[in-house]
Amino acid sequence: YSPDGRFMFGIGRTSAEKMVDGFLKYRLLRQTSDSHVPVSITLFAGAYRTGLSNQIQSNGFDLYEHGTDRFSYCYQVMFGRKFNRNFSMQIAPWMVHYNIVSSITDRNDAYGVAGIARMKFTQRAAFTVEYGYRINKYTNDTYYNSLGIGFEIETGGHVFQVHLTNSFGLVENQFYTHTATKWNDAGIRLGFNVSRVFTL
Image (tube, rainbow, N blue to C red):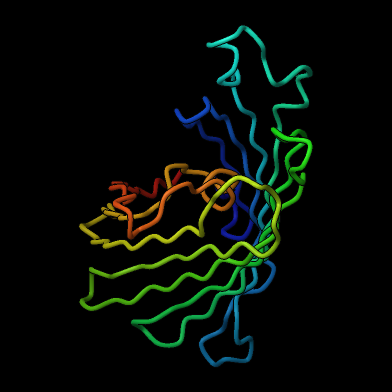
């Protein structure tokens, strides 16, 4: 929900790991049509709470001893620019923090940068791409950078989106840091979104 077009907040629920999340976004700068302000800058903060760990189903042991252990966080600074009426791009450095990690050798903090582009090829249709690059080595487990390619079409007040991606998770602390499959080993997943703007 956005009361003024600059500040936004939201909540969500994800089936994977029974994740509950909330986020805040604030548009610090807005690009102007005369390029007096050449980029838009938006600040993002997300908080995530997982459900019971997988171990509790097999051996009765819950990885998360304390309630705060279930929390993780993501922070981003989004730099976006609309180059013309058809092409826009965004660069977003990110950090994900986990209050608890699975292994003693894992790090609590992961860093990276996301690159996002959108190209309209008709008045109502566009291709999108997003790549999440991981900078530091935060675990000995094998994970890969997230890559998603999408197609979207606007029909009246709705936006329909179809995505192909190698990521299973839907929120930042899942797909940026724990993408376990690659595009070239049949690790591709299909996603579908419908968006609608409501005005109160």
